Image 1 (cartoon, rainbow, N blue to C red):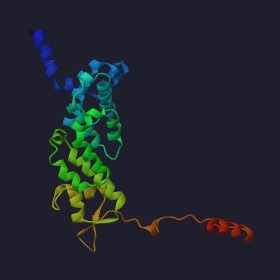
Image 2: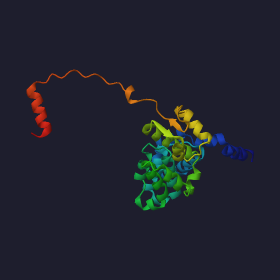
Image 3: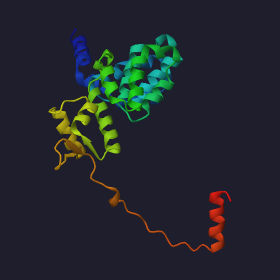
Image 4: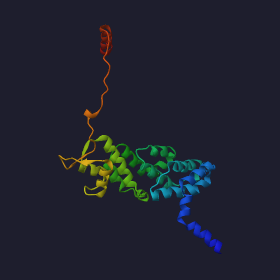
Amino acid sequence: LKQGLKVLAASLDPRTVFEVMSPSHIQKLFQDGGRYDESSLDELEPYLQEQLNKNTYDLDANLAILKLYLLYPEKTKVEMMEGILIKALMAFPATDFSLCMYQIPEKHHGSLREICQLAQQLEMAKFKTFWKDSESVECLAQAVGWKAAIRKFIAGVVSSTYRSIKADQLTDLLNLSRDDKEVEALLKERGWTYSEDDPDVIIVSTSGFENVAVEPKPPSHMSLDQYRALFGAATGA
């Protein structure tokens, strides 16, 4: 009886669970030939749930689940594919979402329509529409940190697109209010500042065209005939 209690206690020990579900354990599972073993789903599916609960990510393991669903269609669980796509959505701008969709048979696309539409909106930078539509996608709630991940992606797009942006415009894109603490945290993380000339404007980048170094080119030594030939080719003469 005492031995049985010890086994039960070990099974309930969170440290034991963490060890079993660690990335190193999953990699060992693959190395031992478990990548294409149907029984591996018994470990990979809980591992996916752990990723959703703890805001971790393992694309290789998730792709392995989708591959096993292709090999053993009767084992397919749409809710698991949904969870995999949510994690891939959180990885934007990486192409993980497309990689996962390639592994999902078309017959399941209808059941995953909401997540696919959200991915399209991110790809097209329709961020306001994304936030509005995401309100009705209940499955997103299972993923801890999904909003922060999407905001990080949007901030990256803003950083590569704008030199400055209206504060209200930025908060609309991020689906935050002006006085939200996350806004200040984002500004600090990105090194963005409010304009001294207009407190309603956020300076995203202080670099200008005048700061771009232009390498001097050596002088051209073309002959008059070469210039004529070049001009004739350009004008179609």
